[in-house]
Amino acid sequence: MRRSLVSLLGAVAVCFALIVSVSVARADDREEAMKMVKAAAAFHKTNGLEKALDTLNDPKGPFVKGALYVFAFDEGGTLVANATAPDKVGQNLMDVPDSKGKKFRREIVELAKKDGTGWVDYTILNPKSKAEEQKTSYVEKSGELILGCGIYKK
Figure (cartoon, rainbow, N blue to C red):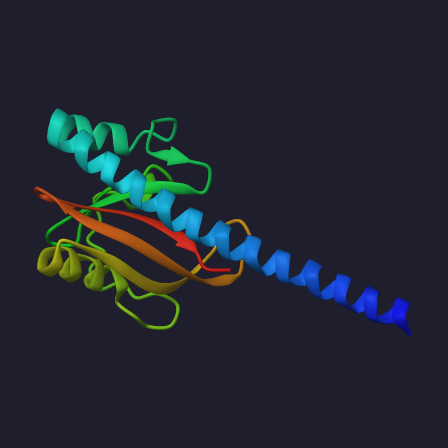
């Protein structure tokens, strides 16, 4: 019986450690998304619009790190930078909903224009898992751009 209790406590400890490590990873991802957006805003301020857009649209550039990348909208909701979806650059996506019908890009633009920064939640197809997943993006207004970086909320 003592052995069963020790085994059970060990299993509970392992589960707790896994939960904590997943939470920390999620917090780290949020922090990294914010850092990337802030770095992109600083780059934009220092180098100007044209250089910023060229760099943000470069799939091998400094604003693409694994699954994380910085995207940019103009104030009207037109996607002006996305290194992972160049076919969508130049399209106005303001009223294109997520898979649940939420016009999250409108929310991104409105939040950035009103508050300057914040987080927006939505549901989208993860291209790697091919499944609908919850995602959140940190957004920040930088001059004429609205910059963002999203993470999946697993």
